[in-house]
Length: 113
Length: 114
Image 1 (cartoon, each protein chain N blue to C red):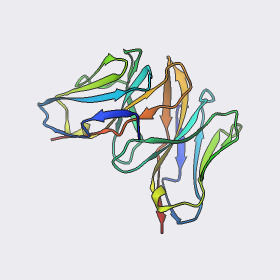
Image 2: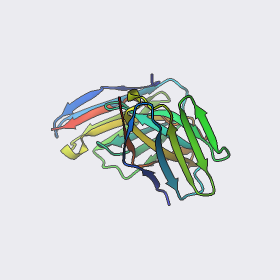
Image 3: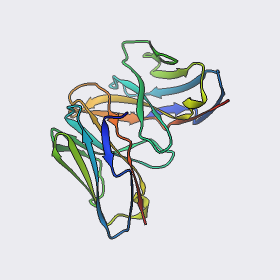
């Protein structure tokens, strides 16, 4: 079982809604990631947090807003999304400054209607 | 130069057969090569990984072969089982700005028929 826990597993939201995806890890990792995965495609990196600070934003639209409240938690706030944003959103973590594995959560399936 | 090319796109193997998935990369800065297994509706799970100073790594029925000079690596699944039916992603990783920059291949959908 993965040690990266994501909630909710499924989310349906309207284009005017505001919702959040949550992620938690207790492996002591200091790098945390958000990926987006469309059907039959590999995961695409969205954001990287390093020591609770945003390190990388891969030109993600501002309707996606990440937040890292502490070293174990990562949120992704969603607002005014479009139907094309429907995808599997994956949280991941890894040890920082180390050539180590990135561990993924089970993902949150998002449908924008 | 950041790409990882993966083939085949899909693969059908009979139960008990050998499944082989190939990947190639260009950037010699990559120094860690994981394989992820993903079942429908689930997140990618690490299957096996190798570093470029090793030419082969075996874990149970899964073996990675690595050819550093050719910049190629492959996954072999011996005695393939229907439960191995999943999408497999090769990846290449390097440290970039203090985090693991992970580049995925396009994925291979494996179906193992009984």
